[in-house]
Length: 58
Image (cartoon, rainbow, N blue to C red; front, side, top):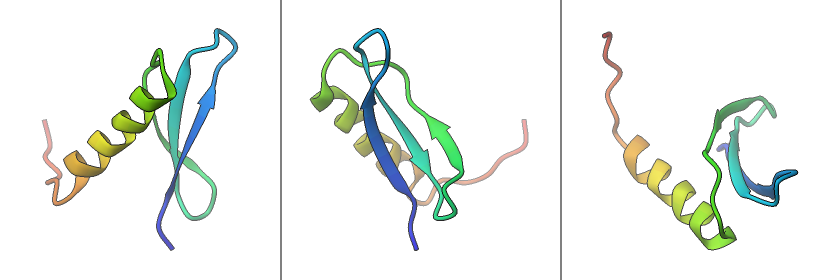
């Protein structure tokens, strides 16, 4: 089963997202966004960036 992006408003009324693994563990958290639509775009950007992303040691 794939992970899930959750969109929510924080206490400051900013929109955020978090990515949860299939087991419910939070694996990534986004920055704050002014609008829900912007938070959704942030999720889309993470999906595009992660597709085929390499793991590198720095």
